[in-house]
Image (spheres, one colour):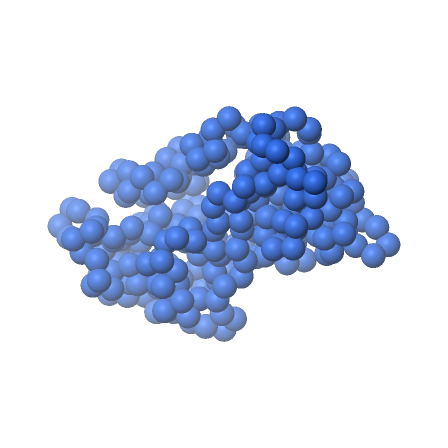
Length: 266
């Protein structure tokens, strides 16, 4: 591994859940990523540049993006040193997990807020029980894959995860029909995402999503993994579920778009 990349990973691993978006990106796209690590006498930071076409999520949601930009720093004053590595004149998407980073980035790039995702995890020492009626499977159920893909997850990536034994699905069935389902898959190291939480519209308000998520949390805890539960900021039902079962907020990643044609900030 390149020495700068190794140092960047070591830095991000000091707070892996807060930096999970950067760590996951480094893990999933090692050949495509550009990594810049800077360490000064009073602060250190990382900047990642991912080509806009590398991720299926970014291709679908932010078409035409040249680079997705990620930052992490012990103090935002180090950002100017990092931002000089961002190519000028391109369509950019900044994914920022620190609110104060936005103000610093805006000194150099005009920004438009377009989305945000909220991450939760289980509180230290909190245990969850597996719920009755939840089928746990390491096989890629085609119908469940369709549900997960409909929520924006990469079908091919999930197939690979299941084939390698890295993913599990948690489903409540009505006959052969999934009524509610979710999956777990590795993000980075021992941090596993709980994703694809879906409940059939006719079966909602019966506590089925709670059952599949709590069963997923039980299995992750038993395996010694740390859970990461993510929800889009406007998905109030998903956020209420996370908070009702005692998950704690870790970080919110805001997505900010920069278009070259936008008037530059002064």
